[in-house]
Length: 482
Image 1 (cartoon, rainbow, N blue to C red):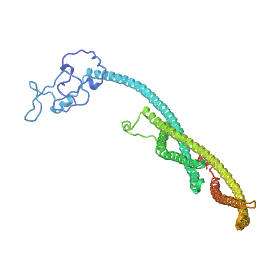
Image 2: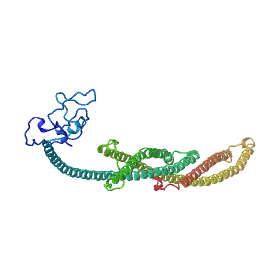
Image 3: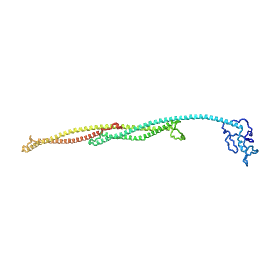
Image 4: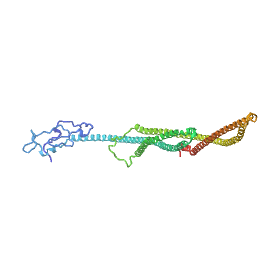
């Protein structure tokens, strides 16, 4: 259908323009270069519209039928077809739109090409960066695993040394207990010997070398108390210090084993592994509690603490060994010296007893002889009584001579009487002396017998003590070996 009149978009309706093509628009998108054209009373169009310099004349609507009525000229087209007439373009607009479309397409293609090249290069760079980062992570994990393996081997070695030291300390503890128990036997024997030697009598109750050696039991008690003190230190060191160090090493070693397992598992992960997954936000949560310096220092401190505990344990074992050796040597020296003193004392007592017995035999013989002498003296005195009677009878008879016959002549018997009487008195004096000697010999005999009984009792006690001392712990038992 041919419409009457002319359109408002014809080229001759506007100002005169050049027939040449317009300049190429700048290399931007069409949406940014061209602005949409707004028709009065209609919504904004999203399609392309030419940027004309003409403006549509605004005509107030008619009150009767609501149609446009431009002032000054009658309407050339029907009002219902006004919108269709406004959609017409010129040839110049068509060429300009094609040129702009071609240029925009070239620019878009060029930008797309550059974007593709940049994207490929970016992907290659990012792939290389990702690969390098994975390689660095693998290298760091390998280094970390080697560090963990190093400290784990150090912890295992130190833990093994500490366990050996704890076992050695347990052995030392048992040795000290055995040594203390073994010392009780000799101490008890020494005390029993002192108790039995208190039963000696008389002069034999002497403070001799045997008693001096037995009294040295206090030194034995001192050795026992010294070893008891060493024994009391062992449980404290074993259960308080060594066990703490062992627990710290075992805990640290357990953590190292877990970390080694986890890091090895992480090291073995690949892009094709089945166990990988997304964990969003895991990189934002920092749950670390140490840095490499403090991490290494923690294990080093545990090892140093264990080494310090082992050093204390070794020193305690050395002191215990010295105490055991010195106690054993002192006990043996005292045992030997006491036995030598016992043997010497037994020999002395036996010799004294033998001498007393020999002396008693001689005293008994002398007693027998003295008794014979007394008997002979008594007989001699008895025999002198009759001659004295005869002499005195004669002297008394001659005193009866008469007168001048009473002469002091040769047969005068006064001298004989005096001589016999003096002889009798002398014999009686010797008899008294003999009796006194016999009494002295009897007292001496009694003393000798008493001394011999005392010596026999002392000899019996010392021999009994020697029989008790025949059993003495050997050196290995004294130093704690059973």
